[in-house]
Length: 317
Image 1 (tube, rainbow, N blue to C red):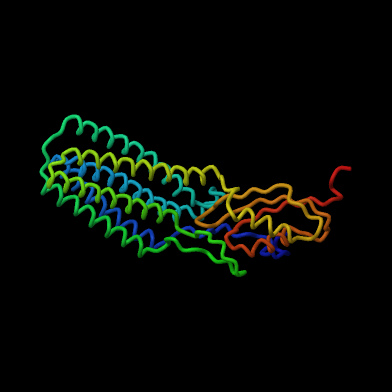
Image 2: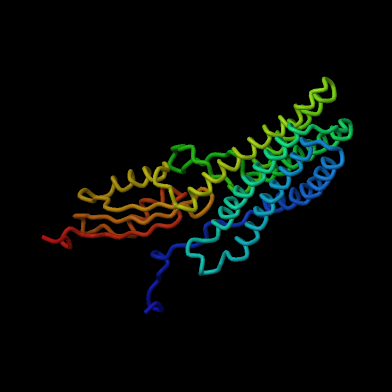
């Protein structure tokens, strides 16, 4: 039967734009730089007896894990992009990686808190000069990594629809954004370490070192909380409060008179891309699923549409 019919009008692409070679290359560079710096900071913090530098090193380990998960996600998404077992593509691999990274971050934050309280209760001498040098090195590395990821692109640009309405949707590479935020958070922790060491070195405030480590732990926990919220929302397909849902409803309202939306499901299948399943009840005998998909095509972030139409004469009397 297919040999006598052109099915292209009814078929839908399942390519949701996975893969970002430039971003993947950037995250790989940042991963290797971060791993090397992490080892230096943890060793130096232990050797020079600085809780702040040690905390910065452990925070950098969580940062390295997040970057590693980002690299893995890019690789896996590319490898399995054409695998039919992934119904809506492989994008959620990176989301699952981010969720796992957030759980690890919470554990690291807890260890940082325990270490800081131990140091407050049992102060130990700190070799401030050496520790300060390591903390400054960590900050410079973080700033360099941030520059690499920024050049990789994908940060804070908005999407403007072709029909002239800017809805302010963020069409970002969420995998790259997560890595970028991780680097910035790590840089802030390095700044806290430097401030703590400076205060202890100049004014003799030994308590400032573990105190700043506590502040760093709070930053890690907050980042983990936000990451859990964002990734959990995607994994649970909680998208029905997104502006794209209202856009779909607006399009349905422009269909032939007597057409009513009876069911709607919207979920994310990529960075800034969505799929939807629409169920309609209509009095129009001319309304077809193809016409509905063509009407929704004005919103290019809606990349996959499933339409179910019930005509009025099918309704029970």
